[in-house]
Length: 560
Image 1: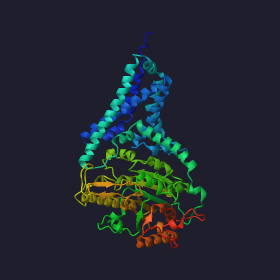
Image 2 (image 1 turned 30 degrees about the vertical axis):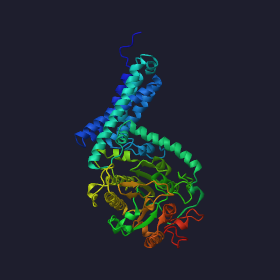
Image 3 (image 1 turned 135 degrees about the vertical axis):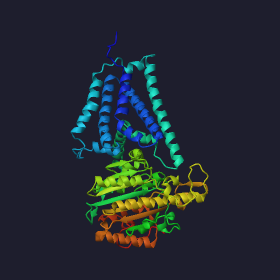
Image 4 (image 1 turned 135 degrees about the horizontal axis):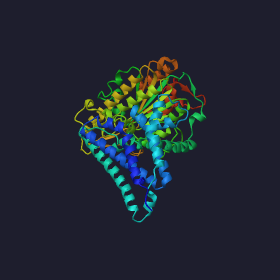
């Protein structure tokens, strides 16, 4: 039987749709990325476009395996969602990630007229409706599934699918090589280039965000069923209204308290924080020696985690409790501990690849200062307060010299290569320069909140052993050296925050603790965050023994 002259094969239609979604709908972002840098950047953007188009073709080909109607419906949905995302990417330079996806899927969020105005619907009619009509009206010459089932006819179809996957992988590998070579030459840290591509372009950006959303739904539901929630068991009362209050918690990475100038180190690694009159610095003891383990034990009540090797959680953390107490919340991270970010019940969060993708065309270095930019945006989104912002930094994580710009290279010579056999002096110099940058990031964070009713907490997750040609942490805590437990705590409060007599009295207690120079513990953070905010609990929801802002004398000392 002769095929109609106007029939089109699924392979051809998939290729055309891949060009449309991966190329045309990404045009504005591709343009911004290609004109923002050198010829190498232009070439890298071209490789990214090739990778996205090839990957989109592979996606459509896989949909075709399920039959024509599944193919038509699936490709139409991908096109519809991609066209909607493209509108905001094109006209508002929005980076589509988990935060945007969860905002769209949260039914009680008010959408402004600007977000869904008539221009949006005109855009959707032109970019989505017409192509979707074409998908359903097209007469497909033969079924991809039938081709694959045929002994010989399936060879070209499968070959095209495998070729598209190979092109996508090869292009991403080339981008990885180019970016890493550039970063190595400049001794800069970069987020995963493949991750940046995935979060920068359609359709992988919204698909990744949607995947995180469903992962959180499944994981969050499972977590909430078996973990105790202190907010549901204890009563918490506000001694001061929280309606205007901002809480910022900065999670440090690997920074050691014995390398902090404010805490007695012989080098002045915290010159900016030393000038802050409303800041308290405390020596701390980490609850564990690795990021994943410390994130489990440092934010729950004492006893809220098992004393086993994997630190099995038994209770919800302080951030989830604040959410239950009425705080909105957002998290921004230069790391990718998604399991932890899901545990805090944030209204939205963005990991480093999403944050970095938003700055590709701005040529900003991928370091912790990007988090301060996100902090400012978060405050603008929540101008009324009662808002929590969590910033998870890269801090002093090795390779130390990649954590700060060249202008912070105060102590030299530095260790500038991962494979270099650096001396202990070079490693320490680089480490101390990273602490200088922590000081700078903290100062910028404080400046952002100085006029607000705000309090900032900082706690590093663990320390690091630094020896001759060696650096390491994550030693089992039963045998880990003390430097892997030494962490700094900082608490800063604005003048407006301290206008409350109760909060001012609690902060005075903090100052007294600083003078005593005793080591405090991660396990005290839960009670201290609530206590310093001005919460009280008549039925034991806050342990006064662990509350740094408890105005009565502490019942017992927990450090030395």
